[in-house]
Image 1 (tube, rainbow, N blue to C red):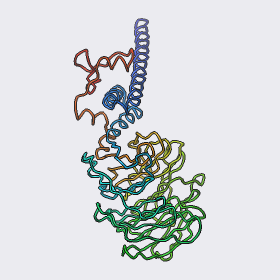
Image 2: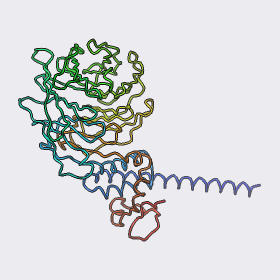
Image 3: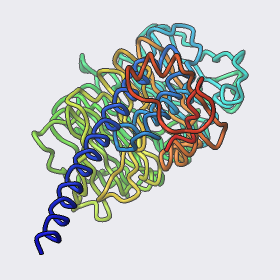
Image 4: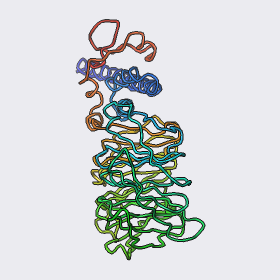
Length: 444
């Protein structure tokens, strides 16, 4: 019995030692993976290939939320193109067609139409076409119809120009919509168009929401002007059918019924946390609202416009968010602001949002963002990089398995010198192959 007890005691002690050893090794792997992921992040902008390899090594050594997110960020960064603009340091606003083929953007000097399709095909000789303005005045807001044939540009003097972009090389201004009143502060702050381009909504600095019928682009007809807010309207969004709208100021968001556009009816005001709205967007189906502010973004469902239902709070950094875009089906949202990072959200399940990626590469503020209909093309406008384009067609595969995605393209390796440099004194992982490199996809 004593012998048996001794065997059990020694076995338990041995198991404890082994368990402690295994735990120590596991902690070492986690620390090593985090170290490599951090090194990859620091190299992302200047040496993408090395950042990819280090990020892949980190995930293969220890896959967790942090290492996976770092590798995803690197892979998404490769899908960014900084678009040529006439004045790349002052892009103020951007809009995108539903098919993602045409973009409209403004800078300090004017407004331009851009063939996005050419940039996706690497035909970077494509230059933006300027919309000629005959009068002076800053362009404060843009809107582009789903098919890209109609555009609106809103000026600081309160007027809005209506453009025909059917011939993309020869934009034609067909009409000018006057300011709704004669007050001193009538500058256009926000614009929206229905899917067919027939209904336009203008939000101005004085808080007025004005609806126009653009069935005849050369002879627009004003339908109504409503004092929607006490101060400037920051954002306005319109459903595809033109029957619902959302407007926002700094302290409230208002849902409107536009079934009779001559008499808009206020339906609801979702209760905002801390009564503060930096940026607001609504899906084209009129069923999802996203409101972003400093440190938080909130999602509402509008299945009943009179009773918005809060479905989720999105965790975002404590920075000001200046703009948010939502795809027509409400399943994808993009928001950005101070700090230059774009935060992409999957809202397929409005109660359980998921952040598949962040769009990095801007070191300063991002003032405007846009998504195409399926969320596979994203645009961000900022002072430091001008206009940037992201091709996100393979984002779902990247987000689902970033290491698998990388290894499906090639069998990547890290040189012995790089391993020593970035992993310090850590032992090289078992990956087969020779002693001069680490076969990253074979790390066990």
